[in-house]
Image (cartoon, rainbow, N blue to C red; front, side):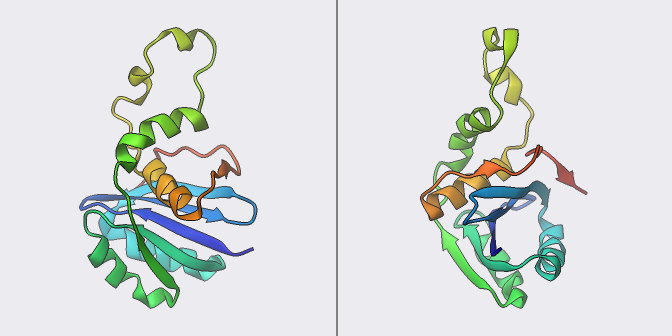
Length: 145
């Protein structure tokens, strides 16, 4: 199974998705400090069969691209316009509100949530022109410290 990494780059934190294209499944979704990204991808590259890396063309994308050259994988810079805005809606597609919570405004459920991994997912979905599903119960807000 060839897997692909998608990254929503940022100055202080990055969203990262590990997905398998033929199955349209997300295997990992995390948010990590930008300075930890290189080591994290290095470790992923040793245990996963990664075919390519997609990086959003926003903040720090050039620097991150340069740091990941060691992978010897195809690195593609892709448009990420409005992914942060779109991440709010996509979050509720992945994690629908159930029960009486439906009566509460949706915005309450995403206050103080980091949606960088969802933005990385949107970059991947836009690049592949298809929607992905969760392989397991993944928390898109997890921080790697």
